Length: 206
Length: 297
Image (tube, rainbow over all chains, first blue to last red):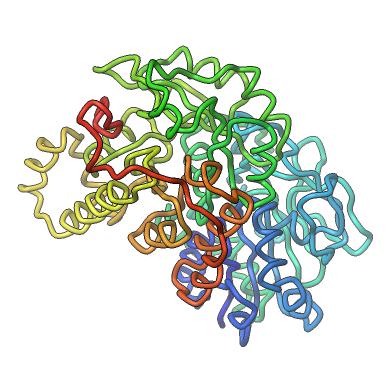
């Protein structure tokens, strides 16, 4: 099992750390050739306008779309969610139109409005998940084949799944609770999700 | 379901810096430059009235920028906007927080307002980035609540030598720390003027406790990649972009150089045909009074 993490910009090292902590190999992806042989791909948090430009410039959009077509698991966190969306409320960045959702960037305001909140996530058991939202996007339209895994108390979805694709507004890579990563690894063909699996060591800053 | 919402925590402050990693933060002096920076792929812009090269040339007291100029930049881009307050000037910081600035840089590039104390940054919901020349200085700023660090370099020179010196000093101190026994750690903490707890945490993790960017003198894609290979998490470029002959191409090239910092073929490619770099001043030609990095440490 080898999961790629898009490493053109953002907190890719944190995702790699969590993956390795749950026993999965992680590969940094900067060029299309780095996608070869991967079982899945994570598009991390970062600045979506920067990701959008660098994905176009280094011709990563088509091969990622190809991976999705071949049934590989792909997951976007925060900026990654924006990149996977079908449409967003602004012209820039340009999303990849892979998931049937509409997304609003910076939906909660500026950095001073970034927040932490506990959420119940479908499929992860009863224990709440401590979610970290940083200048986070939110889903404002959802297609018929998209499953909501978690929503805010006001009903706005913040974690969704469509087949082998996942998107979260928040950053599981910033916590020691690796349940969502384990769930994703199971989607990518790894070991079945085990809700009893322990927490990992402290998350990394870099 | 628990609906407690926590804002302004250290996690969301330092977490924001984590999202900037592998990116370039560009100094801009107006909305047009901010749009160019965003178009070039900057992860954030630093809004200020004068870039450090001009602050050097003009002399006088450098202060927080006019809020209307910062507001115009906030309105013109969707990426995060940072702005500088003077060292120790907590009211400038309060004003920047009230304006919705995404990050405050408590910066030695402006004239210090307090030579004894830095801003007590824990009191703010907006995160702070602070400069350092070595690990001790970095950890002192983290103790005060900095959620991100940048090595100082020597701003407004276009000379990367100080940025290199400071990044090497930080990395060397961390390497040394990893092998230090407990009893020597006590002395090290005293010499660095930092708490033993924070030093132990740094030794345990083998790295700076927050994200660390390079700053102060980066002028070319090769400079940016050099700082990344030396261990920077990302790069601030101040005067280096908009004081060069072709800011659009240079900004775009430096962004790519930070992503592909380990690929010399791509670095060669993006370094071509960028026009004139900023003129620059060798740090060795500066008098003691002109050095910014030695302010309020």
